[in-house]
Figure 1 (cartoon, rainbow, N blue to C red):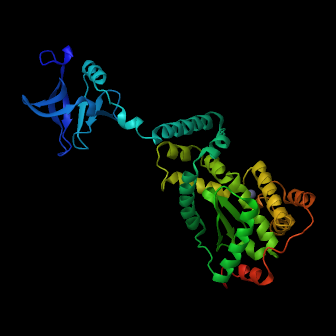
Figure 2: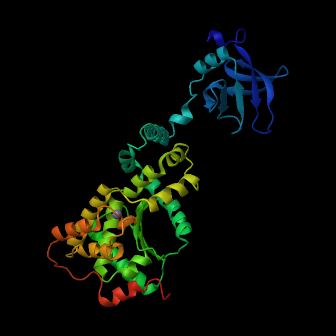
Figure 3: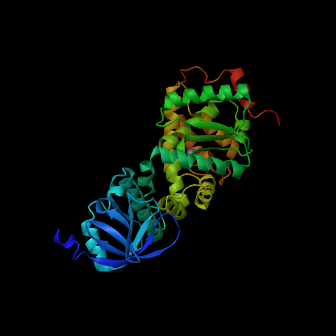
Length: 363
Ligand SMILES: [Zn+2]
């Protein structure tokens, strides 16, 4: 402890913010048994070495705080030699960081996001979106889903339909589908008052059926099979994957800086999510889930193919479930090929189906 005795204790000039008044004070630091803060020859404060923590700072300076000082108190030191000595003497400089359990995860996330940005920039394709999507914690995905939900309402300028009897029927249908499909996270499905004939699955387990599609449907199985397909997207986390891909760089930059909330990136990514079709593989996988779910309910997914065909016809540029790819005809063929004989009860009875059709009320 020789170097810390009163005679040859290292000293240096520094800036001191006392955390009480927003004013920079020119001080002298003296590294004795404790770190002494000296102003105009008088010791104005002392920080025990084991209370000193490092704060974020540019590389050119060292910023310190102390767990024994006011929360906002900071010392700013630029003297390189003194900084090294001080760093050596403070045993708990990084204690606050390592004590946060989330810290390593956040760093990992930032690195993953940064890697993806670089890959996106280099190759033009977010190569690791596929790998990244399943790693997004469900809690995050839900939060992102909440934001997307707000965006959907803005983009479609539409509200969820809420006729009581209709909702009851819709809930019954969703319950059957969820039981058969067994997704990892609960599905939050809504009918949206929009003339668009479509359905879409968003991050966080949200599924939207647009009124336009419901209007075109002629049987509960048509809608159920479409919803089972959307459940497939939820199970496969395609919404998240798609969002990472299409939101691309800006979305990932948002992740990187932890500023996902209400950012322009989310608006952009949401529009992309709605406007762009899922990949052919994702569609095919979701169709597989639809087949499994409908088979599990003793029904078939064929009606979904029939509904799609009725809506799209030969049209090649629709979105979501009605994506131009894989071609509707091919999908219908597959549904027929993989169908088992119908053995279960209808998913809704006639009265329930009528109620569901009227869930958005008269218009
Ligand atoms: Zn789809």
